[in-house]
Amino acid sequence: MKKDKFIDKTLLLEAGVEYDLEITKIIIIPDDQDYYVGKDENGLHHLIPARFYSSYDLKTGDTIRCRLDKINCQGRFYFEPEHPVYKKGIYYHFEIVGFLPDENDQNNGYCTALVKDVFGKNLKTEKFNMNPDAPKNLSTLICYVDEIKKAKPVLRVTDPHFVV
Image (tube, rainbow, N blue to C red; front, side, top):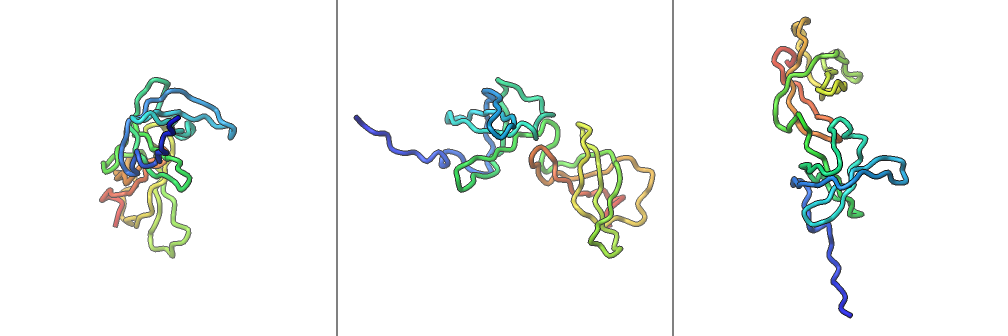
């Protein structure tokens, strides 16, 4: 009887690269959370926590583009499905909910903006230096998407009306 050599499955995929995963099913595992089971081009199955991506409207049979964020020391793969609307490196207009002063700031004008995404969820931007002459009547804010983590765009305020 011939034994197959061990193949380290973590060598088949590379962190930082995008892959297509086919959603083969949705399961509940002992932590009482729903997971999408995605099959990659090598036939390997990966778990993607469904709670972060519920607004993506994913279902069994869908093929989704995912970035492999990292492979941990135990060989677990962490995928970030492509956002259905926002893309890394692009500017978007977001509805302004409000501004939150930085608690550690000594009245130098630093704050974060609270904005609403396309799904109606509130997002906080990265901290920025608020222009004291910013118009009070604007309803949208231009933000740059630095990255997307767990379905949330990481936003940097670039709107010249607001940034010093």
